[in-house]
Each structure stands twice: as structure tokens, then as C-alpha cells.
Length: 172
Image 1 (tube, rainbow, N blue to C red):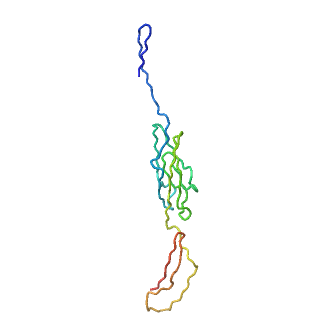
Image 2: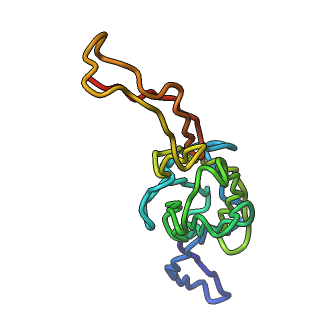
């Protein structure tokens, strides 16, 4: 841009002035979706990334930061504030809590927006069976080889914390 100035002496002066226009932070960050869902095994390692959620901002110079604002019962998850990566931060137990509904905020230090992240905890076989009785007794005849194999105990019941099992013991 240049400016010309005219004076009474009919001389003209020209100056070049550089004007920079900065982008004002007048737009909030936004998420592509209002709801994100993911699954994680209950025995997953601490620091394991479950999901990365990314927000955008129409303002050029905005630095977006992420924060879990609610739903993080027991501190089970955390978010990397610069990347939006949600990771396991504490012990998970399917038998105690099967689902987390996190509220995630994206902020550009002036404006913020929110999304919901639902994380489903998947069951793994991490509990030993529990038998109904401590001892099971039966009798068999020694050296009786007729009708082998023979069922010795029938309907031996045991249960895992998340499901039951039924079995029999056989002698051949």
C-alpha cells in the first residue's frame, strides 16, 4: 500500500507502508462428530492409546488444547492436552464398570467446544473359576472296565465372575 500526500508547494511525497492483518480469535474449535466411541480390553496397559479425537478451528493461529471435563470415574483415562489422544491412565475392570462416558473439551484459550466419548470396556478371562463346593466325592469300583469311559461326577458347577460353566469328570 502506498500513500501520496500533496502540499501547497505542489510537491508530492510517496511512502510505502506495510500493513499486516492478524486473524482474530473469534471462532470456537469444533469436532467432526458430537459422539465418538471406542473399545478397550480390561487388561490393557497403562498409557495405551484408546482413541485420538481431533478438533479444528477456523482461526489460523489457534492452538487447541484438550481436557476431560467429566465422566472419568476413578481416573481411568487421560488425554494428551496437545494431541487429543485419550489413553488408559488407571486400572480397568469389566466386572466393575463396562462403559465410560467422557466429556471432552477443546479450547483455544478463549473459546471452547465439547464432544462426548464413550469407551466400552471389553471382558477378558482374568478371573479364576470358583466352585460351588470345596470338595466333590464319588465312588468307583476298582478294576471295573465295563462300559468305559464312565462318568464319575456329573454337573460339576463352577462360576467365573462374569459367566458360569458346567462340566463333568470322566474316567477311561
